[in-house]
Length: 481
Image 1 (tube, helix red, strand yellow):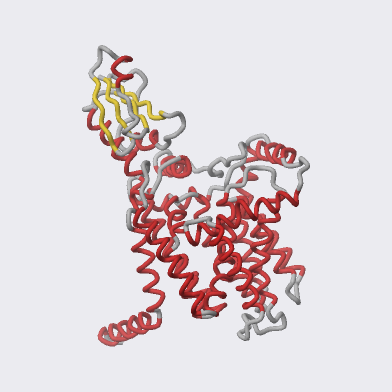
Image 2 (cartoon, rainbow, N blue to C red):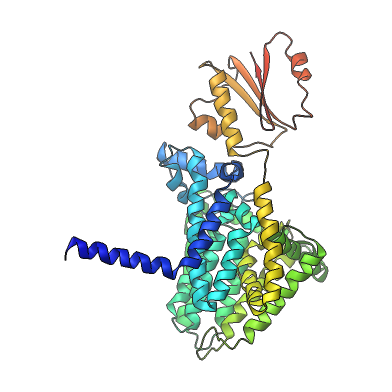
């Protein structure tokens, strides 16, 4: 086989690929442009980002690896280790500095978008794939969530896996149920435990398919729970600490409440405003009503569509997965006694986007109204985005302290106001030198609006010292020598 033949074949293949995927490539280019704009300002470096950074430091420097991830808001609960292990990839080439992390996550976001487009096109058709991918590419809420690089980041990618494996299962390929259960377990254990409601929706939908096999269901359950092995090992090594914390959690959530009122409150005050903000950057009642109508109309059209999603003995039972996927988390949180932030409903975005897209593809007028408002409001939010605290600002502050101290010992007080700023201990560690108690120089990092900053208090507190103030964004670096 000649080199000329190989090169010609490769060029032909590339040309076919680009011609066949022009819509997807345009969407990807738009997504990259919106995400890379101000990418350094959007990347934070707080607790959620420092935990995996410390895990990477232990792995590469101390040659240690842990079987648990970060602690959750309910004290004593921990995620699995996978989210930390994944971040060994960007931290390794960057000498443990966080600079590569946002670009690594950007790459994963684009891969996720491409998979989403391909799978939605295969299941629901080309129009649905184009519109729904466009929503994900442009949504400022989606972009912000991806830029945050926290453990819930991978839920959208896992959701794609659940939809595809369940689709294949309804086609009669039983082993895909096991693979989907494995994906669900990975998400619940390693990325966000509230994803248990999406996992439950996955299993409930699987049970409405005809021709179920007990053996396959049993293996799927094992595939789900196998993800808990690292936590079981950790629990065994630490005197059943996780089991005792789980018992405390059950006791805390056993109080009586009015579940009907809670259900209505969740829908009215959390769920619908969250969806409206995701689409229109506003929880205005008009946008909430508009969003609700699109969801219901979308399911109606999908259920009665002439184009059957699955032409098999199960007919269109598969489409019930979408409303089940939305309803189960709402019902689940109705019985949950803890605080319910709106991002807990991130797991419902996947089916909601599909249903809304089905509505839009049916009526050109509704499509034009929706996308005009959606694109304008979200692109405007991307352009106007600003933040007063992020990794770039913290990095600049750390580098200034290291430069200003001129190789002498120093100490740093950075949590002013208390507990507001995190990440500094790790940044000082990887950028060269650690603060020392009683160091020759003292630096105080105060986070406040420059208009409200009062430096007189430092002159009064240290009358015999030389005091300088360096301002980086909202961080005031007070140098006391």
